[in-house]
Image (cartoon, rainbow, N blue to C red; front, side, top):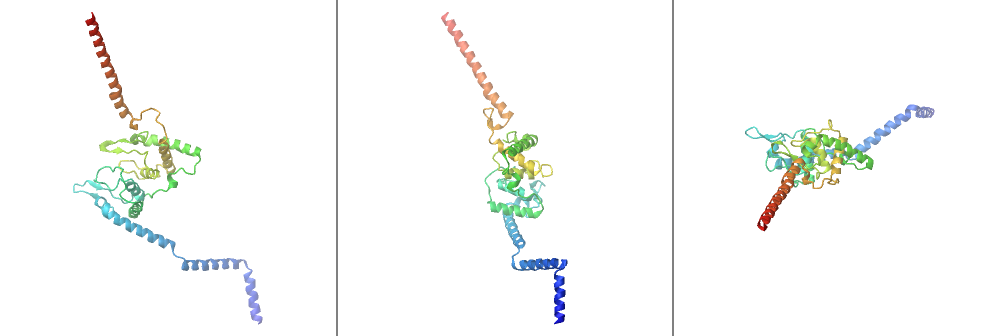
Length: 291
């Protein structure tokens, strides 16, 4: 009995020590963590299984609609003359797939041509699956979220400042191809820069990020995500700008304006000059007959 009392007193003394609380806390954490790991399902394993299923679905779609040009494993294809049919997709990332397929540019009706904007051939879920498969080939740009390109949550002053900054970037880097109004224009070797005023902000961001076709690649290293967002804010603001010059003529710049001036402006002047000359001739003949 004396031994039990002595042991209880020793335990009571250790329990009041500064290390005892730490030991009890560690034991509690280990016990609760072990119980949670044994009882709760593994969310990471579930997510990995979901990603694998999405990649598998994307590969099945890829083999049917994309492998003819890009190869069965996205390695790219060339014809018997060595001419490129479809480039390698390793490293282009999910953003490139979301842009090309989401805008209807892919799949192409004929390899080698510049992909026009058309109706989507795939649903949103199928596009996500294709993007997941291509992203699994090699690391690349991911699909941006609305936080990357949206100005929601900004004050009106912050939006105006973003538009001003974006306008400076756009006028410096984009007007040579897309026109100062975003209406697009002709490019060398039969290419063209498309009209971008009707393009969604997400696809504009992806185009800057991935550089589709002849377009330059504005990676986050040479154009930050904030600067891309500012450019998108400026493009969105152009939709609301009135045409101060009267007839816009498609906003195609000096080519259409010069053609209009030659055909319509000078045409009217020539027609008026011919009318004056004819009227003067008739008046002279009338006076001669009267004399």
